[in-house]
Image 1 (cartoon, rainbow, N blue to C red):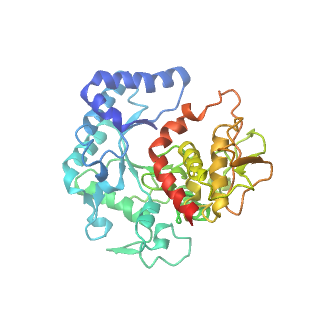
Image 2 (tube, rainbow, N blue to C red; image 1 turned 45 degrees about the vertical axis):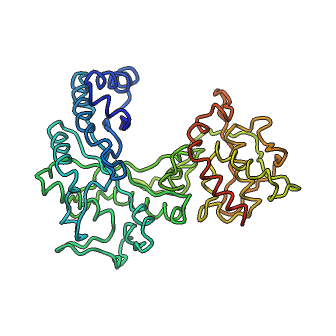
Amino acid sequence: MLGLPNELLAPVAANVAAAEQWVQQNVSKYVSKYGVDIRYVAVGNEPFLKSYKGMFEATTLPALQNVQAALVKAGLARQVRVTVPLNADVYESLDGRPSSGDFRPDITGLMTSLVRFLLDSGGVLAINIYPFLSLDADANFPRDYAYFPAPGAPPSQASVQDGNVLYTNVFDANYDTLIAALDKHGLGNITVVVGEIGWPTDGDANANVASAQKFNQGLFDRIVAGKGTPRRPQMPDVYVFALLDEDNKSVDPGNFERHWGVFNYDGSPKYSLTLANGKGVVPAKGVKYLSKQWCVLRPDASPTDPAIVGALGYACQYADCTSISPGSSCGSLDVRGNISYAFNQFFQSVNQQKGSCSFNNLAVITTTDPSQGTCRFRIQIDTTGRRNLTPDDSAAARAAAAWGAVVVLALLAIVSV
């Protein structure tokens, strides 16, 4: 599934030639030249989110229509279908029962037009469902209702009775709320795929390896069994989010946003998962690492040194420090541990470059692994063949600049404890 980002919706909607050029450069080229198995073009990403306040509502459907026309012109419409990945906030149930599902009143007309076009053009509807977000946003949300029930386990006390159907988990209830909305508008024949679903492993008290393993194993068990929902008994196609963590991703929704991966940065599984035929996930092969060394706070340096705050701010502006936030895998480190973790994250992110473990002489290189409990001090993988990036020209530097100030504030609080 190939994505056309939200910032391109307006130009692609305004000019079919722009859509044709985008399809040629991003779809046709890779299908014909490299044999890439592209099955869908996702036009936009959750463009009708309430938080966007209508920013993309006027351009999404025209962009979708132009991309479809471009695929037809390129002779790819039979093998590459269009979709629009939507957040679950595009539909609702006022009484909590899935059978009462309907589209959000402010976009009902737009949703019916969009789904009708997808139906007519052979496209599919992609919906992103995150039980984790439901749990994390509400301190009173019933925890067991966020997971798929284990075979033989009693139903959650939060289960929803809807006529003769008992909904025992939030995924089934959420998905069927959408199906009810589609049926209500005569659009029940559309194929619905789950565009995103998963559970993060860090950056939040509810985000940990055990919870992610429990949720994703329950999901895979359902997929392998082919068990769908009460309204759609066959399990839909599911895109599990995500393969790897994204250490440059925006943390505006929460620090957990950088930790959705099933695999660690080095291709090792974070936890076991049993897939079809009893097979499990396996680590990447042939991964090489840089030298077995870490950057930590000097033993004779004081955590209250006035230069610490600036050093931390610099380190976490260019590297990911979300794992030391409260409730995270490194959240139980003491002040010295927090500082060392931040220093090492920077040191590894610049490929252990000479001089990158100084921080005004506050840091020192050690060959003794400082990892503690669930907190892993990583060693960068060997990226031989790629040029070494300096902090100022790295992608991490550009992407992290916007949130560096927030991290500095958070670390100030950590240091002051």
